[in-house]
Image (cartoon, rainbow, N blue to C red; front, side, top):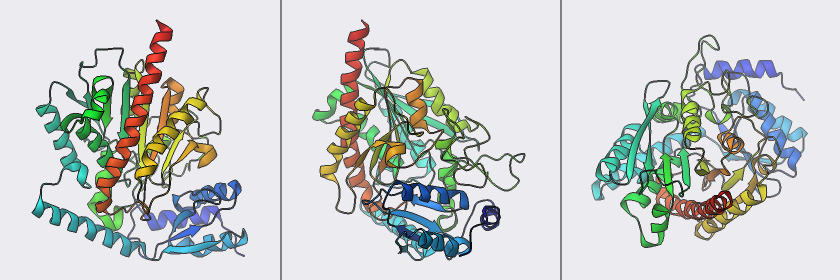
Length: 436
């Protein structure tokens, strides 16, 4: 058996990626059956060897999925065999899958534009469309919506969020629910859920949800990583799997771009669950908060820290609701986090499609994988009582969810968001009483 040479593999990976772009010719995705936590952790170690882990799996329940380039496929599969890990071919041709994905999106846009107007939350909208929607909602509903331009991305795009409040954020008896989406560029399913949440609170407020608007203030940032997101759209067959920002620092690397926002926060920055090669998908940046996009999220939290009761960082994919900490320690209120997360999952599970798993809830390190520098952990450590990561469904397509699933994902996820919001209000009210 030929063992990996880590240096050789990284060289190969860098040579193939160039500026981390691919044509994905010859790439494949493989399922791996996990028997225990050691198997799950082994899957995570493959990331340092250039393997793109699509799903880390869960022992005896959910298979891991790994994308392999032709250059490293044989070595990785041999190592799986050596460890007696059962594996199978899940997707034979990533390049063809990306082409089909693009065709489905184009057909979706074409069909729906003929029949009716597509709203941004019904589609995989581009940056300009999302920006225009935020501008329009704020202009049409100035009594409850304030549009905030939080600053510029690395490439100079405005990063905007909305504040939704019946009292212009002046009532301290109301908790704040802070939600963001698309930290990871390739996770296209997350902005529609954030935009749909705005729609449900502002444009389509239903009787059963009036308490969510009247008793809670909202901050919704639908596109946390606009540069990476746009890059992933510009040429789907080459850039679709892009994950990070698009920052460039020639003193760090002359060829590789970006950092993983969700590894760029404090605490524990750069200690576990990262790869310090700047060409890696899991590169945490040159230091904590090196990315302007990360600093914007941090500053929102700090500005409203006295009232943010819940922080929901939306990702994809896998049907998870997780909380900190990524280093396998637990917050003091872990029982309450488990309760709120479980209630959230339980409200979404009855609505799920057959293609999706039931939601799993728990500490992110103990259920999925260890990590450092994620937004969830930062929010928890600075004092946000309920800081979660919501991993949306993949429906068997991984990151390439066909747009026909968007409407269902939006409505299903909204039920979980509403449940967590109401519970956060209950906890916040109890806290206010105890402090008075």
